[in-house]
Length: 450
Image (cartoon, rainbow, N blue to C red; front, side, top):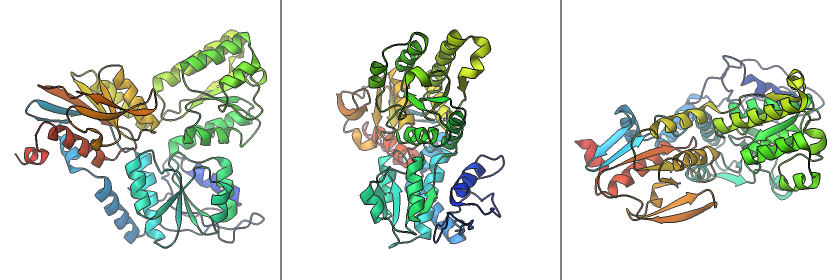
């Protein structure tokens, strides 16, 4: 889980340069994520000072972290079902698992780093986490149970005032805004950066757009922490702007404005909170580059790209397209793997689908959307939501609220599909499977013993 550092002798840099150096190192071929922390004790921005190296791969730390993570999140049942072709059957009930589900590498790495930080800095040393480590309530509760304190993703002045030099602050898997990082660095905090490499790939792309004075069109959710972090990157360097589009309806609106113009005030009101300060659609839609929140549906992002490309081609001509349009595939590989696996599962005969994960998890919500198009789908955060075979509490993302459905589990011979988002641990999937069989009066423990 915790990987060997690929960095042996880092050069000396100024504070800001150091951060960029380590971020870039993650993207270089054959390099693995460094588990060094950067200690900013007595750091000066006026002279290059080598960062204090903290080895999170000490044998005692590595052993303890791996043992804790396995204890908290591993599932022997899930592993056995996977080994059996992803199916578990008894009586009239069959449960089918998607081939790919649950924790991705980026999530595992983030959790490992958080556990390693707690081990290296035992209580009463304060450790703070910006918001959530990942979008799963059970995992975040476990992090808090380790004595890691949650502060706002974008800390308030009051929260910043309480932080002291040498306090440890964990940056979550979906990153943080540029100004937030700068404020933490200026306080002299020790940063444990768990930002996913795929997210940093998007940041690199929008920074390049910014340097070229190209407006970043970001396919995503404007209020999502990852998208906020990405938009901050779009304004951190150069003179670029950004605009966030959530779906194809918003995409078509922007493309129509590019081609035909429109009422600027109406445009700005429609996208309030989803564009950069000083953004002017009459000026800043002349050259655009498409990027995305990494957990969006690949097919929809590709369609966003296609429609913007078509609009710019129509507006400026094919020969001038390179001056007005850029795009880059920044969909997370793990997200796509889970979507592809569910798509394959949905082609098999099933009566209903259970999707397990945090309600604020973007990649999980897209899995639920895929299921809803094919068959009855129930998005739950844990097995307790299956109150009985007659009653289930599940999340309706269209109204952004938990709802109750009666008579959700059909009688007779049925097949139930199960999948989970990239931030859902296997132990929650196991609890879901056990609960499904329990509702039919079947003990999984007895089933596995036979």
